[in-house]
Image (tube, rainbow, N blue to C red; front, side):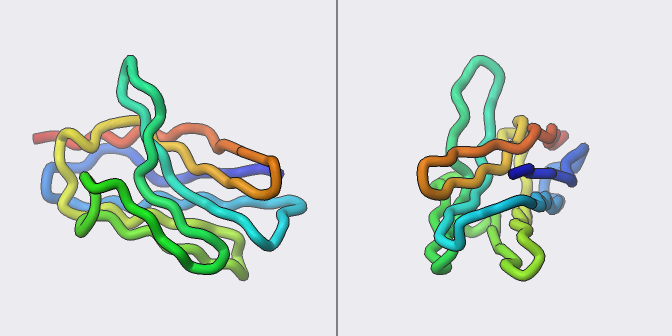
Length: 114
Protein backbone atom coordinates (compact mmCIF):
# COMPACT_ATOMS: atom_id res chain seq x y z
CA UNK A 1 0.00 0.00 0.00
CA UNK A 2 1.29 3.44 -0.91
CA UNK A 3 0.11 6.87 0.10
CA UNK A 4 0.96 9.79 -2.15
CA UNK A 5 0.33 13.22 -0.70
CA UNK A 6 0.23 16.43 -2.69
CA UNK A 7 -0.53 20.04 -2.06
CA UNK A 8 1.03 22.14 0.62
CA UNK A 9 3.31 25.10 0.17
CA UNK A 10 3.02 28.72 1.21
CA UNK A 11 -0.16 30.61 1.97
CA UNK A 12 -1.02 33.89 3.61
CA UNK A 13 -2.98 34.11 6.81
CA UNK A 14 -6.66 33.97 6.00
CA UNK A 15 -6.01 32.07 2.82
CA UNK A 16 -6.86 28.57 1.74
CA UNK A 17 -5.03 25.47 0.69
CA UNK A 18 -6.01 21.92 -0.21
CA UNK A 19 -4.07 18.78 0.49
CA UNK A 20 -4.70 15.52 -1.32
CA UNK A 21 -3.59 11.99 -0.55
CA UNK A 22 -4.09 9.12 -2.95
CA UNK A 23 -3.66 5.61 -1.68
CA UNK A 24 -3.13 2.53 -3.77
CA UNK A 25 -2.74 -1.15 -3.20
CA UNK A 26 -4.77 -3.74 -1.37
CA UNK A 27 -6.83 -1.89 1.20
CA UNK A 28 -9.45 -3.41 3.43
CA UNK A 29 -12.80 -1.79 2.82
CA UNK A 30 -13.22 -0.85 6.49
CA UNK A 31 -10.62 1.81 7.18
CA UNK A 32 -9.93 5.24 8.54
CA UNK A 33 -8.02 7.92 6.65
CA UNK A 34 -6.83 11.12 8.12
CA UNK A 35 -4.40 13.97 8.31
CA UNK A 36 -1.93 14.62 11.08
CA UNK A 37 0.52 17.44 11.54
CA UNK A 38 3.78 17.80 13.31
CA UNK A 39 5.37 20.93 14.73
CA UNK A 40 9.14 21.08 15.28
CA UNK A 41 10.08 19.18 18.39
CA UNK A 42 6.60 17.75 18.86
CA UNK A 43 4.78 14.53 18.12
CA UNK A 44 2.32 14.20 15.33
CA UNK A 45 -1.18 15.24 16.24
CA UNK A 46 -4.47 14.46 14.63
CA UNK A 47 -5.95 17.18 12.44
CA UNK A 48 -8.92 15.32 11.00
CA UNK A 49 -10.01 11.81 10.14
CA UNK A 50 -12.86 10.11 8.34
CA UNK A 51 -13.87 6.46 8.48
CA UNK A 52 -15.06 4.41 5.57
CA UNK A 53 -18.49 4.69 7.15
CA UNK A 54 -18.33 8.48 6.99
CA UNK A 55 -17.67 9.33 10.63
CA UNK A 56 -15.57 12.49 10.82
CA UNK A 57 -13.41 13.73 13.64
CA UNK A 58 -11.65 17.10 13.85
CA UNK A 59 -9.17 18.55 16.26
CA UNK A 60 -10.80 21.41 18.14
CA UNK A 61 -8.30 23.93 16.81
CA UNK A 62 -9.34 23.34 13.19
CA UNK A 63 -13.10 22.89 13.60
CA UNK A 64 -14.98 25.27 11.37
CA UNK A 65 -11.89 26.00 9.27
CA UNK A 66 -10.76 22.65 7.86
CA UNK A 67 -12.85 20.11 5.99
CA UNK A 68 -11.87 16.52 5.38
CA UNK A 69 -13.47 14.48 2.64
CA UNK A 70 -12.81 11.24 0.86
CA UNK A 71 -13.51 9.88 -2.58
CA UNK A 72 -13.77 6.14 -2.20
CA UNK A 73 -13.95 5.55 -5.93
CA UNK A 74 -10.63 7.34 -6.38
CA UNK A 75 -9.10 6.18 -3.08
CA UNK A 76 -8.25 9.74 -2.24
CA UNK A 77 -8.66 11.86 0.86
CA UNK A 78 -8.68 15.63 0.85
CA UNK A 79 -8.11 18.28 3.46
CA UNK A 80 -9.52 21.67 2.58
CA UNK A 81 -7.95 24.26 4.83
CA UNK A 82 -9.59 27.69 5.00
CA UNK A 83 -8.97 30.70 7.20
CA UNK A 84 -5.41 29.58 7.64
CA UNK A 85 -3.42 30.89 10.58
CA UNK A 86 0.33 31.13 11.09
CA UNK A 87 -0.02 28.53 13.84
CA UNK A 88 -1.18 26.04 11.21
CA UNK A 89 2.38 26.01 9.91
CA UNK A 90 3.58 22.43 10.20
CA UNK A 91 4.43 19.29 8.27
CA UNK A 92 1.22 17.50 7.36
CA UNK A 93 1.00 13.73 6.96
CA UNK A 94 -1.78 11.58 5.56
CA UNK A 95 -2.56 8.37 7.38
CA UNK A 96 -4.42 5.18 6.61
CA UNK A 97 -5.49 2.66 9.20
CA UNK A 98 -7.08 -0.72 8.51
CA UNK A 99 -6.91 -4.03 10.32
CA UNK A 100 -3.52 -3.80 12.05
CA UNK A 101 -1.97 -1.50 9.48
CA UNK A 102 -1.04 2.07 10.35
CA UNK A 103 0.44 3.65 7.23
CA UNK A 104 1.87 7.09 6.57
CA UNK A 105 2.48 9.17 3.51
CA UNK A 106 5.41 11.48 3.12
CA UNK A 107 4.97 14.74 4.92
CA UNK A 108 4.16 17.92 3.09
CA UNK A 109 5.13 21.31 4.45
CA UNK A 110 2.42 23.89 4.97
CA UNK A 111 3.64 27.39 5.79
CA UNK A 112 1.27 30.22 6.62
CA UNK A 113 2.70 33.71 6.67
CA UNK A 114 1.22 36.50 8.73
